[in-house]
View 1 (cartoon, rainbow, N blue to C red):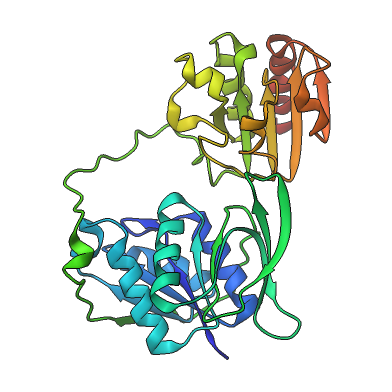
View 2: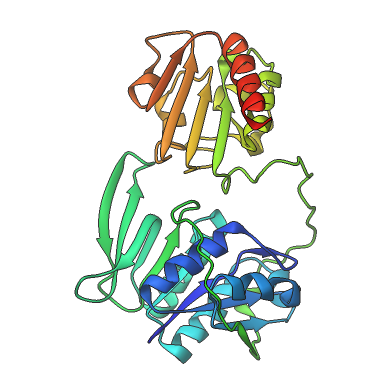
Amino acid sequence: MAEVLVLVDHVEGKVRKTTSELLTIARRLGEPSAVFVGAGFETAKETLARFGAEKVYRVESPEVLEHLVVPQAELLAQLVAKVTPAAVLVPASPEGKEIAARLAVKTESGLITDAVDVQAGEGGGVATTQSVFAGSYTVSATVTKGTPIVAVKPNSAAPQEVAGAAADEILDFTASEAAKGAQIIESKPKAATGRPELTEAAIVVSGGRGTGGDFSKVEDFADSLGAAVGASRAAVDAGWYPHTSQVGQTGKQVSPQLYVACGISGAIQHRAGMQTSKTIVAVNKDNEAPIFELVDFGVVGDLFTVLPQATEAIKAAKD
């Protein structure tokens, strides 16, 4: 059975949920092999084994992460030449998509980005469902040349635990001088909020212009659900919420199991960032708001009245 390479997304060994999703997808295509770059492997090994990684190729050299994405693309290109994998899976983050694009060029292979489903093709190969044109269309796509390289959106698969060996092999890798053209000289960890990462969360609650700048009810409702908090462009441009929480074409694209839009009209810019969500609920006092054209469930009402009632009901159900 051919190997399927999965680029591990982690922070000092703490493996993100996107990686467990990719390992689950990889088992549909072949034998999952993780690619781990940086420190913290001993911390990550248990998670990688729990989600089915049979092998782990790892590079401990700090220079790979001291520069931007080019060294990681070079590393993956060397691995592709070495093991001839059935596919290479990476998370569809801005960094992941750049790595995937550079890898496709280096290996002369086809690239699919923003995949929302990946399956083994009927006649072999890899069959994907892809979200394109800012989520306006969903298409079926396959790679016809080289090794399929697929950038998969978060929440595209439910992680399934299957024991794997996670046998590690340390690679002797040295980045080329050309790959070291841009060096990271400083980085700061994102301040902890106690909420899930926006792009990885299974539930996202977002607020817009209708909050009038008061996100307290949105945050209370999100916390009752264990959800991430997002915001529309209008809200972040007004300074009501951080730009890092913006959902939309010029912000972050999310695809959670449940998306709740509170006081958001539903302009195309915002819809482009969330319309691949599995279930969409909107709360808006304007019954003609465009967001209602998209939703599975809509509530016409003032969010300052609706959300506190919903929050209390959820808390009562938990008790």
